[in-house]
Length: 471
Image 1 (cartoon, one colour):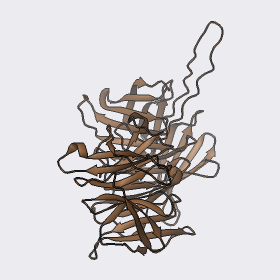
Image 2 (cartoon, one colour):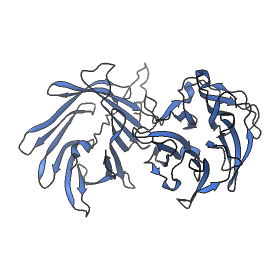
Image 3 (cartoon, helix red, strand yellow):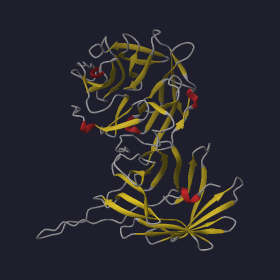
Image 4 (cartoon, helix red, strand yellow):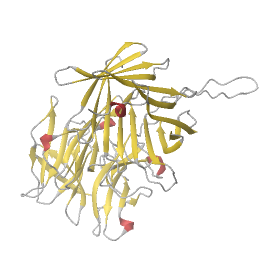
């Protein structure tokens, strides 16, 4: 049986902190507390120095209404150890949860119900629906657990939880039926941010500091930690490498690949629900692929694969909620083609393996890719240009350039359009400073975020920090 004590999620929602600004004639209205969208806790063993390495992480995501969506515990390398989803009914009352620990092939389930306003009951059932373990939480007036009973074939004991004046957990301990106390730990809060949320605390056991916990708290919709990892544990994982990423219009869908073998990757799709990307679903219909992209409508995916017959190009369409059998797209030559970006449901910009790699654009017509033009003002003879992103109004184009041994010619480059959307005239490209080398760049979140891959994780950087002429 799993340690249910470890699987319980602690609710760290503090009391509202009111900041009053006084003047000689009036008092400003209290500032409304900001709603947390994403948090990341880094754990360090004590004694701690700034050079100490983390021992584990925890990330938690919230829906846009503030309800907890999912928390994930990761080891020091970012590999998922526990993954926990909260489930709600149509009125946003919790009815259960799903969780999976490292090595589990499938998710296990919890059933949640409320006996009354102050009693929460969580049950675990076997394959025939018989309850084999129960946890009963007694809730305080803030709907936080102050006592929890653990019951299997008999009562095993209780968790007791105490809170400080700010509503943060101050002490937790387990008492068995004989009255012996186990796992007694307390917390001292060293730093509170301006929004009244804690950002650093000490964990103490037996009067000894055993852990330092640092918490990054975010109130925006970037879902990006201070290490610039995008959707850690959900889209970016420690187990596999993430290679390409592509978004539909309004970022409602994200398509991406994961791999241990770059020539044979797996495609995944995740839909945004109530402001947060959900558990990615593997698109097994695609087989293995090299790279690909989703169209603006989210109803087409173009991808390429490598095999005994060389590079091949495929298209799949979403029809009545199901992805069609992949359709082979005929190419006008035998060159390698990939790293696509859809500007419409038929027009694409892409890489073609000529001249060590150049950028082109063309159209999908039936089961053919018609190459229209090479982007001669951008392409170079000494470097590889690939993985384009085109502004929806075609004001600018961003791509990756790589020249072996020349750092100045490695990274993201931007070309501005001196023509119009119908007849673009792409000027000479310049390097974008301030972000590391990568590819598969997309601008999302209403133009606020650069998202791309470095070959291991998806990274995100704020657009307004890069000094670009995008307006």
